[in-house]
Length: 159
Image 1 (cartoon, rainbow, N blue to C red):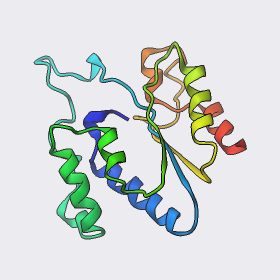
Image 2: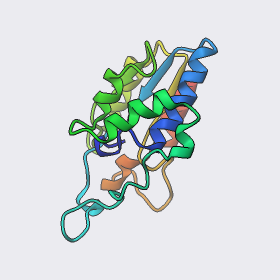
Image 3: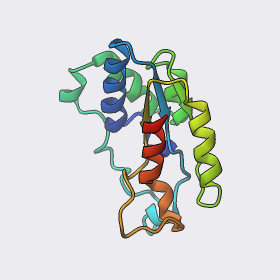
């Protein structure tokens, strides 16, 4: 997850789901898999790819939960668009968040700190940029931070 994506349609879906699960009695933890922006994600002019607004919450989707949509759109359009803004908005009351930035070199220690921080949650939502690691990305690749490793998922399940 990157600060520049905060408040987009992906957050709308995940937060709505987590709020529903919380209403069923589960305590929620979120591991943001927070990463810095990569130069490979920039256009030749220095602007970012996917900065065209198409990932914002549509009016049609807004109808599902207008209050949540309005909170997230405010974040998405602010100069303080960030993961911390989502946390401060308390959209999942009482949730536990792990927002320490992830790096290739310190991943093992980072993962253990996340496990320790989120140990009290019934459910942990893992939020990498791109999902589960794919074969084409090595674990030591600079792009590996955009993925969750299968053994990390296993560790959370076992916890």
